[in-house]
Length: 510
Ligand SMILES: Cc1ncc(COP(=O)(O)O)c(C=O)c1O
Ligand SMILES: N[C@@H](CCOP(=O)(O)O)C(=O)O
Image (cartoon, rainbow, N blue to C red; front, side):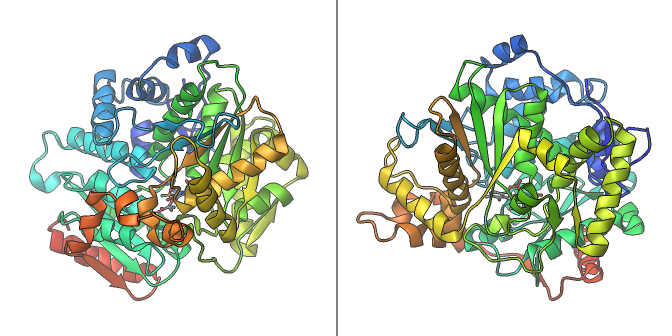
């Protein structure tokens, strides 16, 4: 049972509770929290789990990471039920099987059936309810002026923001501030975030890149005084609860693809901040017999370069691609994987030593812009992972050819992030040349969120209509609603902090 947590950068023995880990978000040494142990499940348990609903499976997995003394089982079940009742489909993350016909075993795991049409909903609906649960319990008998509050501060390249807002809107004692890079998210993503009227929500459009926004958020967590004053909460995938909630769909999809727990299955994951695929890594380490997890990047390829060279290097410029949610220079969750690699390969399984090594690597990243690992580390990483880099023209071609050739259903429309994954999947199929492998390609967003890229790929097809075939009514009407946003003219932490305090005062929460 792995029910206590430690920081990736800590060289101390102590671990802490799940509640503290979730509320704190980021460790005070700048590291990310990881479970002190990864629980293992037996093949017999896997067989039983293969018969469960998504919700029941989520419960079985989460209770291995959360002590019932912290969250009693009936409460955990209630949290899970509430979190997934907002999805448009009962099975939460359905699998579109054999999309290209039965010869290839290419399945698309549709993760976009939640309130904001993005995979982030799977975790952020749960995180919102978890924050509410902890706050209600802490505030139960307290007078108004002593109630504990959480000020959520998050960075988004488009999707985390709206999923976090929909997970937290209207929640008592919670305020939400979402930073996004001005002009670098799609119009629908911006509308989703800025048209939410709830008083506890404020979007901040920051002149800069997503990495600037992410750096500011991490710096705010590191600002001891500001953090203490406002009790800053994390909704980005630095928060362990995000990863935990995503583990379920790897198990669920595996069982949907094949009831036989011996089958060879590869997951292909469009990756940026490495939160989505990291959940797959935990599933594999728990005993799900996954062949490999394939990291699919766009031309912002820090992850692919690392897997090929062993050098983790922040490049100078972020490229604006057709898959903007993955336009990321430094991938925050990769730190968690690096910790496991350091521990297994360089630290003889010693947690504290792994923390020391991680710390050195990250000091080097900060001072020199890069670090390099021993080839043995990469060799070890390649047991679980492979990687592919996909260009914009390949992304566009993949949207086109999938539309033209798909069988189940016909004219299947991919969003550009999903297309990066499907293109990588096709490459893997050619390399593997093994018809017994099942490929599960993760679909991380609904195509309606990326109209420009989708229309550019498909407008030449006779009979294609974005409004009729792609755009749900719910998203269509967003453009008619009033927008609420605040511009931050410079990517500067002091400016952002001042804006947050100004807005908290207006919300009556200061
Ligand atoms: C649509 C979409 N696809 C893929 C990703 C990449 O996921 P991750 O950052 O967890 O690697 C994101 C952003 O996180 C996203 O919003
Ligand atoms: N692609 C993300 C970027 C933030 O990543 P997160 O998973 O760490 O929250 C987005 O869409 O905002």
